[in-house]
Structure formats: C-alpha cells, structure tokens
Amino acid sequence: MFKHLLVAIDGSHHSLNAAERAVELARRFDASLTLIHVARRFHIPDSVKAYLRDEHLEGEPLYDIDAATRKVIDDVRKEAEDAGLQSIQTVFKEGRPARTIADYAAAHQVDAVVLGSRGLAEPEAFLLGSVSHKVANLATCTVIIVR
Image 1: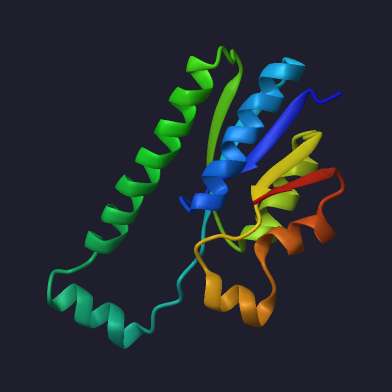
Image 2 (image 1 turned 90 degrees about the vertical axis):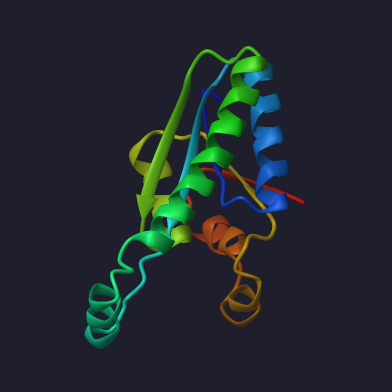
C-alpha cells in the first residue's frame, strides 16, 4: 500500500508520536522512510545583524538549535534502524513548513505524509492554522495526522 513515507519532525511530543507511527507503517509495508525537518527562515533587521556581529554573537543560537534538532532526528533514525528499516533518509530544509513538506512529498513520489497534530509553534497555529491542517490541504498524497 505505501512504498515511501515522509514523517515531519520538529521535536514536539506530537511529532515524535508521528515518527513512531511512521516507523510502524514503514516496517509493516516494507516502505522507505524519509525524516524531514523544516526550519523557518527568520528575517532579522540589519540593525540587529550589526549588533550581533559587533557583540560577536553570530551563529551561537543557530548552532544550539541545530545540535538539538540533529539529536532528535538521530534518535528517530536509530529507532527506525532498530525496528529493522533498511531505507531511511534524513532531509533538512528551510522555509515555510507546510508548503515545504507538501512540495517535498510531491517532488519525491511520497505515498503518505505522517505528522503530529500539533507542533512547537502553538500560538501561531492558533492564529494562522496548524501545519498539519495546511499540509492536509496542500499535499497531493495521503496525510496521516497523529495525536
């Protein structure tokens, strides 16, 4: 039924539950599994960039986020390997999460996207709609939303 599953991981509890379900489905259907993390672009005013540069603060926050994100992704990858999955890919993208996930799925013949019902951006989701809701509307493949 599924040959290629894409699971979106942002480190939230719901995304980790989604990763568990995606691993189970990939094992059951002998499917390949792609782990995707989409980082939002932050537009920083030039005055703030100059301040960060002058104070030698460039890169430090991003480095910490990258290390934490990579650890979460590595842990999920290890779980998938321990479950016996043979075809696992990891993808890091930058952009608008819902659009980036849907576009990746369409471009890479993904049969189903698996993602958590809520992510890390709760206040924004309340005002603008959740990433899972947007992916469900944008994707051309099956979308499985996990609580």
